[in-house]
Length: 326
Length: 293
Image (cartoon, each protein chain N blue to C red):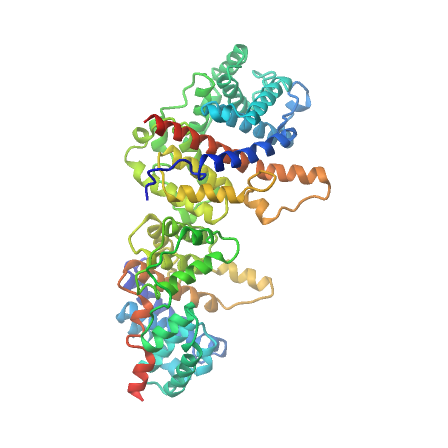
């Protein structure tokens, strides 16, 4: 069913604003968990820093949301988003996120994401960009063995960071990826599905780029696949993947009753504190006894679906703007 | 999967071949499987009449031994199919079976419109019309119930089975209900919950038999769940896990219902003119029984 008069997959603009507002409030209340390690210390450079690594990843993902937010002025100008952006920029500098970037290249990909975020916000230091480009030109990073998925993901953020690279032609990479023949849904693992969603996010630049030329004849079948995968994730109450496939539907410029069902289900799933739970949280995490440990475990279980849901909000808004312009 | 079985009819013949070799009616350990085995043999016959020869000896042996108690102890559809086989062959246990069917009618005559009520009326009198207007579409509100937590999905499937009289009456669902049902099937198959996935696929066909990616994927999944011996489902690991958990289960007990459901689902998805509840009881068992008596 094609919805001609659709305004938002979240029902209407007010419902969407309420949903986004709750999620943003939760992010603001939990910023300390996003805080990455102080990079200009010896400990931050040590291998096996799992806690530091997950904080860096969460920090970069929050930044990626703020980068995308610049495309939706109404969202970007929201007071909560302004506060998040100010905190993120202050933190990336205070933590010296790009410290010793040419020697400590273990977090290179996350640094490129962070640099792309700064660039989109008009705050990118040129010297950092040169250091990141130097690492690329050593002839290692872009020559590592990678799947088409990893190459497309990486190339997306290198492009966004303004770095020149030789990771390959998008069309050829798309043809070599699982988008050309997606894995049969009854046998898929979640990892397989994240491959599909990330490929689409980055090939379509979150809905900004028409992928019909890149995907060619594979596109109609892929639309059906994404629609069915979205229904499956809603049925499984997997809100992280449901939000990702909802974004994919927007990237494919597809609108239907299933999108409204997804938007409605995400709103229903949102907790009173604002976060969107994931499967592990819904199934009951084995929480530690101490309050801090419990809060931290809960944060790392639910921050990702919450951020992805906000990606969906921004994509929904930009898609609405695009349709209005058409 | 069984490389030889390409069509659903061939799959039925293979399943019948497995059944003939797997069930030993004189083995006390298989006593509880007699009604299910007879029900599956009847299903194989309905899907592919050529399968009869593979199970002829087994069916004869079962008919000699089966009792009304065996039917009562089995789920309704299988019991009714077994009863149909008994009535059709006018086996020695037929008089007892008519008493069972009469009792069943008394129980469900005033029954509510649940799946068993509709099924029993179809089987006994050939009357499956639900007391709910099938033109009234199931809505997206019901789709919300399909989320796998809790038993909401079962409620939706039951409503569809009742309103459509197991696919024999047109019933409608508002978008995105059919898609959500397909999604539920995919999720169930991912967890290897075969009965739920197959029930979802049948319900999807009752609302809309047109081909889709979900039906195609589900159909292929079931087909490739066929084993070389003609049965369905891979339960080697599950039987070990059950044994280690102190709940030993015969492989036959696990495979009989799954093989039954797999063949039933494949037949209905493959051919929308095949609806088991209508095909198995033309005219109704009691009408036929009264004529026989």
